[in-house]
Image (cartoon, rainbow, N blue to C red; front, side, top):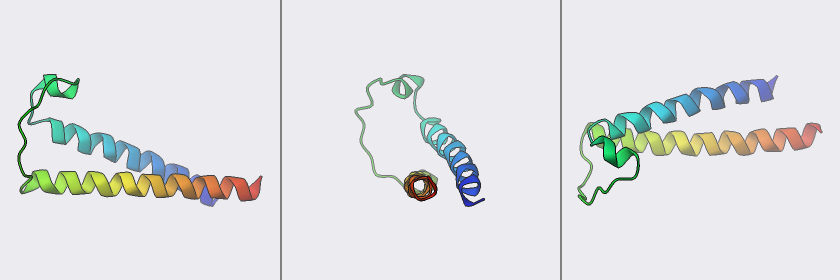
Length: 77
């Protein structure tokens, strides 16, 4: 039962990560999405900062769930 919950949570988090990354790139030119040059560096403020932090947290949670899933699979099999 627990591995099914973890798998479902990973799917939800992966979709969330994709959405957060797309929202971060929405304000930039399409060329930067596919590896174009973005030589302008600036500090993140406001919503952009929250999107960045939220993406980092979601990725960390996805990694933790992946490791937990791996541990559970090794214990049961």
